[in-house]
Amino acid sequence: MLPTTPNISLGEPFIELASIDSTNIYAMNLVHQGLALSGSCIRAAYQTQGKGQHGRNWESSAGLNLLCSYVLELKQLNPVKIWTPVDQIGFSAAVALGVQSFFEGYAGPETKIKKPNDIYWGDRKAGGILIENVVRGQVWTWSVVGIGININQELFSQEGAYPISLKQITQQNFDLNELQKALSSSLKTALIDWIKIGEAATLEKMEAQCIVLKK
Image (cartoon, rainbow, N blue to C red; front, side, top):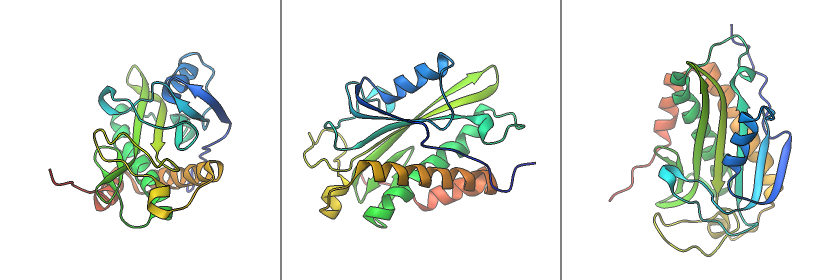
């Protein structure tokens, strides 16, 4: 049976790097080398090869935004369950809800999810999520959750989706360490909720927070 409140740890240990190719690459290397600790968060001030969806790069100026990857071993969520790739659907929805809830707490109800895993404020992109998983045989063992959120950056190249940052929305500067803690907490809450209510209810909750942009 699932525990009433799963014991999920996110954000510790915390690894902060000045510059790295990609926090997802760094985290996945730890997993493959057997050095990863479940719950770890790797954050970089700057990424030279920040990874977005479909091989795109993630644009971000050094030291201004949240660029991080969380490492999670699935048995931490439930040590007796056999996790399979099918479970990734609900997991991905829960992560998106966690990031959306985090950003909404500062930017307000215009914060929405654009499928499959972008965070928008109105019609402008505020963040993105890239989840990479390790499957051994038919068992899903580890997940690396990469998150990029525009926080204090004010100038963008304007290529692709028009970006926006939390500072542009609120006209305030933010402490990245405090926001990292808030993001970890929001993700933990969303994952616990997913485990409690199941995939179907989690997907329904996500649909209620989704936006469809006009072309």
